[in-house]
Image 1 (cartoon, rainbow, N blue to C red):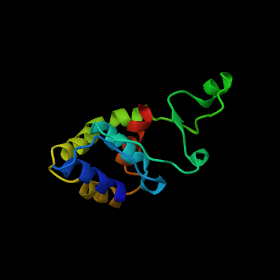
Image 2: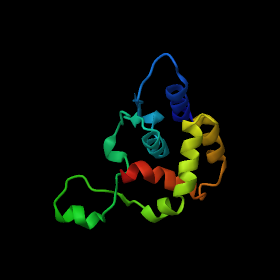
Image 3: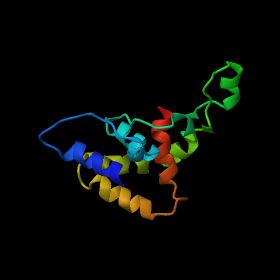
Image 4: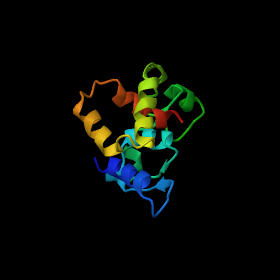
Length: 130
């Protein structure tokens, strides 16, 4: 997972300090948005074909349709799932921030879990919530 290596580079580089990172579309994942936000970093990917990306919101799509928004959300953020897993999410991020493990090590482990594992969608939802 290349974006996780980017987090490693940002956190473990003692020469160049940066709090923002940009990638092309291939370096973008929703979970990286969530983790970089919680780490205090800004992730600013350059997304190709923006109209094909999923847009999330707190409110139902009908709310935005009623206001005649041109860009409408595709999905609703599951804040309950995030709340249920909040302590595990913070532990995950603290482990990276305190450098007990690298982001690439943790993401490799997380990716080995089932896609149904509760941390996958709940971490993705963090950046979507902000």
